[in-house]
View 1 (cartoon, rainbow, N blue to C red):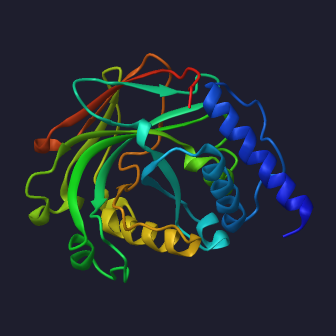
View 2 (cartoon, rainbow, N blue to C red):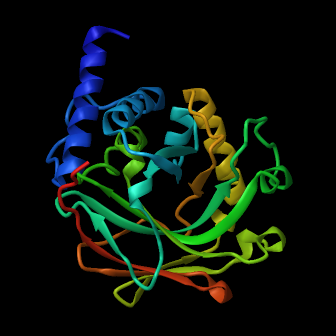
View 3 (tube, helix red, strand yellow):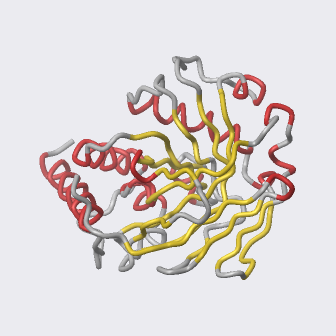
Length: 269
């Protein structure tokens, strides 16, 4: 890696961390955009170091063809910070970047139990064996940069995977015996249904997202042994929204999760 590349990476990471801390927007991408996922995760790792907050989980997002072929991966990952992971109690307020990109996603949240050191499971049964909880949830996708998704997966990954928070709903009782891919899921914004689907449309499903994430972290030298949440991917789609809107993710007979999107302010960390 050249000094010019390192300087560019540092500038991008610092710009995103500063904007997220200030709750402000970034009108244009703050440097030369990464061309590969390796480049993107290098920036993300620098930003993690600069940010310094505790990470309690990771979001997993899908990369569609033909970019999945070009980039060598059909998924991407980004960190979820402890202070942005909220246990749902009614309809909690979730901060988003009003001058950036804002969306909400209905997701299943799988928790890798503390103590995992490998090997990475190769099938769903092996993946279930390393989990200790599954919850219903909403990923709040937001970035200070409004063009984050339009810029492609590498740009998305470079700014924490476009994650701004996680709403953890109720535990899925008896999850060991439930077909996660058969649960009917819908997303509502301000009372209007904006998407309906099941996790059966999501590559190799929620358990596959866990396997991807563990492999991604291993490649980057990140230790998962403390336990972590995996927000396994947008089931009904990535639904753009705005400040003040109310989001409900419904999971059939198993319940729903709610939040209200509010403007992010300055953090004091």
